[in-house]
Image (cartoon, rainbow, N blue to C red):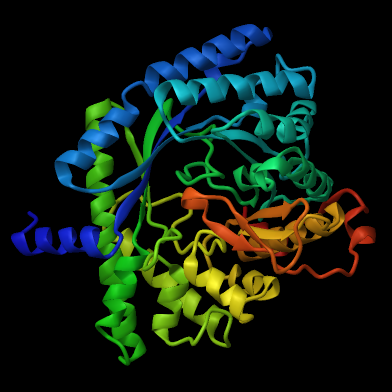
Length: 454
């Protein structure tokens, strides 16, 4: 039973420390919508989404009102669209028709994002996979709420370098197609290694083929709560530091567990997982970078940053797994530049570089996230950055991702404003030495030897 002290404590975390449930995400399988006729596919997709998700937003608002817990986003993830449209789509334009349908369904039920305009090509690409990937720039430029992801590598299969090279072009083309919005389309596009099937966070969410017909996944967030807790043990040794983070992560995750179970009960849809990632926002006091500084760094990027982030990530996971039987998704600490005020300040101060961010991704839960780079960055360079990040994920048996935004018409030192949860970002410099000969080789980088465990 929860006691009155815990009630007051939770209220304080919500009112003063930016605790929120970042998203309730309804995962929907669209495998039963597959058909050889594209119009039939679109009709089935629209009907299934609008039927299953019709009460999602209202349910989230009701729970938020009754329990006093902010639930920021209500979202949908679907079966990777390359699978859904494979039988019907004969061109990239056919897949764009599915994207428009998904966007229309998202608007009808009132969710802010729908993820799953995706392809899984870690080992190779089918014709449908390639068509969907080539359709991404147009799909993201003509829709508002559709998010896209492509999984190009895994620990078991290696890295599909043909897909990596293609994604370099796709990211750049998406930037050009949405240049009038400061290349915002790229903020809705993620390239993955070891992508999880149950991630509730955008833009990388999709509903895996091994999942049930529909599930409720919840993402909680509380960087401000963790920072406040650490302020109370300033100067303490590592043992006390770790205990404080674990206990705080436990409390944060319990709030998410409550919301998940309640949403599941009211919607009549099974509960899937809690993703206990620390997801920052541009709001003051809601920053992962500020947690790292509270641990003892003058600024993120200083020596010790990677070790501090590794400690934080591990203790968050240890505390969270005790609070829920089903922890999944990404679960850890996000380090998106544009969405974290402390990260932005570190970039502006010169302590945080793209290379240091890459080192940090070896121990965090995602990867290079929401990083604005010069719009004239070569697509081969983008592919090389993607390849580096995929290698980190493959070798370390973890999820890594890349969400780069080459902002057309802007260069290092300028700032791009995305608004809302996406925040704003300084344009970061990119190594200008070429990797063209490397990324143009074609084929696959083999999986590491430790992948062979059967």
